[in-house]
Length: 372
Image (cartoon, rainbow, N blue to C red; front, side):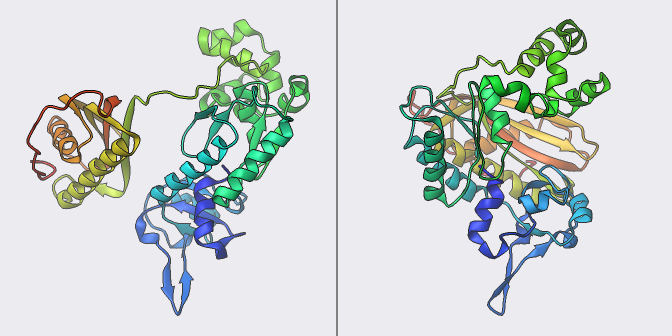
């Protein structure tokens, strides 16, 4: 999906089409209505340390991108509109676009809220016609555009889906790999991140073609046997992974990074409210997806960027918010709460399908203060 979160927001605020818009920060950035007109917050007005979740292509042209701190983004695009995230709405549109694709083919691998792989190999019809049909189905169901890459494997299709954004449709044959793929930067391969890209550049390897021409033993020596061998294969466009139409999640979690560091004592009330909200959110996600879990965990990041996790295993799996909260509270008691916190997260693991076993009766625990 093209700039998915931002595109969903533009459906809600069509007057912002064509403008640089950034999604991120807290709920306080809701548009205000004055004299019958909506007034939007601007990046220049932002103070805090939130990060960008996504941005429109107009904002990206100004150097603003996901993961960038909002304060840094304000220096690049002070007049860009700032909107809060609304994940409930994004999940709703995610379900809509995936249902639309299933009208064409059920062979879908879900890769998150805004991306899927599709196996077209057993469908009758011409490739371009099938891909165009999928794009039309998605637009009719959601009002949103998507970009599709069609190739012989998932690695190449992923690269191609980014080549003509937004609203793109790229079809690649294996014979076109040297002309169309090799000139691209090595980081365009999904799996080569910033650190690996920088190390490749230090070795004089910047493009996929240069990576393809590199000596395989050298890559293994520099990056390890598995990753080095994979780099060589990926640069040549080889990928044997099948489209996996179903896989069980290992865990479900929610976390939040605070606008300012919160102190466990002086900000106890705020932390308690956030903690409860995270537990309620994880419970809601579990119920919506039809899972229960036995391993309850928490994640803390302190103001010195040290991150700690703690887990607690229940006798019976659960999706109950109060049970999750009580177990997560037990985890908190095994941490040091003597300095400010940047981040708090709650996770439920060891998942199984709800109803897979008969639950044992237990009394519902009362909600308690965060640090009781």
